[in-house]
Image 1 (tube, rainbow, N blue to C red):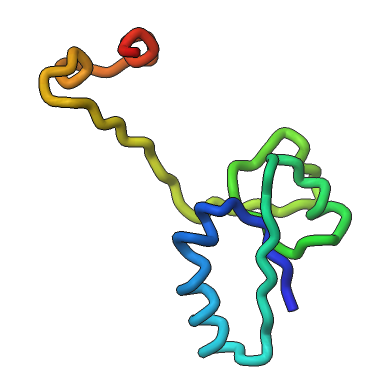
Image 2 (cartoon, rainbow, N blue to C red; image 1 turned 60 degrees about the vertical axis):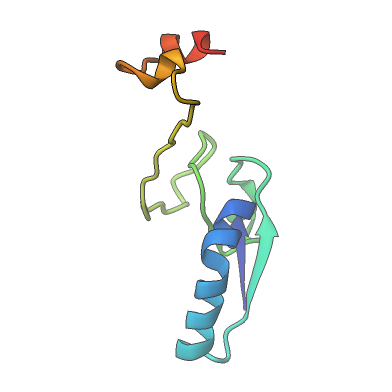
Length: 98
């Protein structure tokens, strides 16, 4: 039995496929998903969770091993003709775009 601490988005996007794969390759293994409301790695250090996914916070200690699984990016959508639909987007332009 393994306890995984993840965001809702992780469970929604990967949970079903992960459960199916574990059931196929390791039928005796159980996965328990618990919410991850913050970046604190305390539950990992305390041993209350076995695996955690998400952005690594500043509280990760040397006893916690981390490995990048993937990188994602954000995509913005605006209406046709919106000023942000043309030219390069910067943080300043985005913030001023209302």
